[in-house]
Image: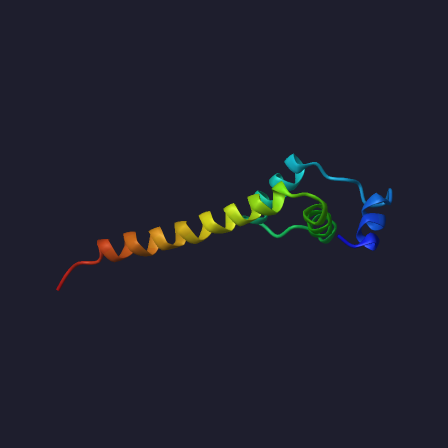
Length: 81
């Protein structure tokens, strides 16, 4: 990670977010757009944390899997000619 990110993250104007707070924001982002300062906080946290990017990948995987399941379920409900 670059030093400017570490310096920016250490500044008091950017309060540090815990992993719990970041995961809450990631999940809330599924339903509604985050504010600019929340998006910045998530990005900064992702730069310094090893576990949260993995959680973000898992959320994206689940979103894709649910979309595939919905399409599959909708195709089964269609009447056959």
